[in-house]
Length: 394
Image: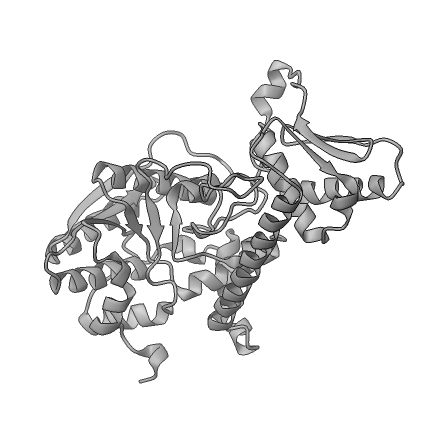
């Protein structure tokens, strides 16, 4: 039997959960599918050999979208009880959207899991994302024109608040728009204390192929459910999943895609360090009311770094939510033309911030309040994040 087809051993599981040994309580997101069922099995087996053992709570989210949901939740409950794990079912109640149902269900799931963790006084929610999920996520984001941050893929640990808000990067990365790491979004300096009741999403199986989890369950005779939406061609992820064998045949395996994500993460960290350095050199401080940048110094900065600086400043000063990457790029390009003498005057607004040229300075300040008609307010859409992260289950 090859390593790819071998079950996950107890020794390997101990390494996968090694950073969780001091957690008094763990929340497991268990749907009843093969991946999450394997996670429950592995955690229960790992916990049995520990003293003191953490309290483990398996949480199943019933989205109310399929009639099988209640039956699958009951199946998970029986299995959890068999392995000595507490189980809870939480339901997504209320009206469901007619479009974007997978994204809405994903966000609802994480909100409910966050609620479960806070009720149990737990700081970690474990999900069963695998190496295959990582590969699908990269393809999904690539198809949607993601920036470098999106191509970092999923990470092992991230604040669940950031996932709900549309981010998904590791906690030690400086957020390009809103300083989610606790650092000021313009200067990079430490600004805010750790958020109270912070809950982290942990993906301990992110480097494990799905096939190995299935073999692990088969070797112990553990049953699991199959969600038909995973092969529903109406959903992009299902179509990408169907393409994976052909892509792997051409060398684009999940392992190579995951390695690519690791290299992008390394590049992303270097870019953010360069942005922090440039912010310091330009004298950008924590004042969120106005930023004034010497245009001559600005033009000496590499385009990628100046783009990120612009995004940070707009995100810090604006009041209309995160900045969409495409719109930021368009504004930056137009600003570049104006600075080269292509436009006598320049003034643009984005995400509640106004960017203008005044003499030798680029000025970024809050935009004047807009006047919305009642019907405009009712139909106004929430802005997208600058670096969009998301997956069904990410």
